[in-house]
Image (cartoon, rainbow, N blue to C red):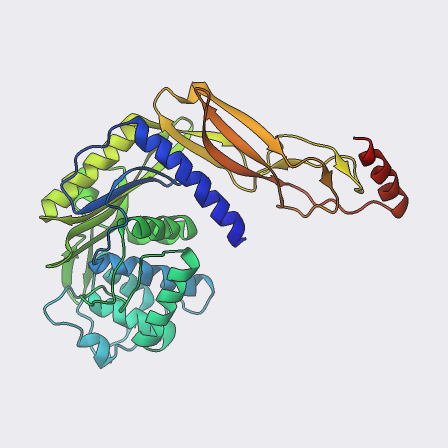
Length: 382
């Protein structure tokens, strides 16, 4: 599986480079930025995307990801009440808080609103303790997930993002983390990230993501700010794309103000929607061929992809796109389902702009000893 994901990542990088070179990126007033098409998983543009930055409260996206995972695995329940520890209550008094109180029960659901809408650092610690028993144990889980996702330039030191030399990331890694949360937990994303304000303990606080008020297609995601980090914003928008929907995600770090991070994020989202189209190449499970199988229990095998395959291109370029299939012939049984049997090259104006692994859509067992012997003879003369 890791090898397959690496192959996919390499192909997407190829597409991203080709797309980036085809259209000039806008000028963005930020330390670093990246625009990702979540539907195709292609980077449309970036600047200093691998620059190490302090993620500030963008850290809470990983905290939410782990809490959502615990909920999915039934280790937590949204209506479950927990007592707030003194440690959670005492988190930096001058920082962003939900204003939970020691020994006063609060539900996981309330804490998630406090984490994602109010950006409460106290909520982050309380949730960390609910998931892992302690903040330190939760941080171990955070960095284990960092490794699993392949975030090579990220390390977390706490669940809230308050300054620490060991709390760092990049725009590139944060785009991967944010898109994974949206794709892996769509219902939780829809519930918690588009809420414009939340009241707890008789204190109402607005969501700091200004784009929720400025653009109805924006439905998340998270702000961050410290003196060193500057003003950061990860935002995502979902707009019509043909007969379906298309999602873009922007990461803007180190802006000079709350207003600037919002306007630059909206600039990126609009640039991506206006200048690119996302086309569906093939559906998950769609057969793109039935090549001959040698020494197998069946004569042919269906080949294709185990996911919907999308590509993002500059507007007007999709009509010039042509696929070329290179197979690993001869295909000799046994063939496991989802094993790579070839490569699909996407050609644009005679140039290869992306390679995608083609997989076996079914398992093919070996033929009988007589069938294998006969095919061995046939192969000698092929």
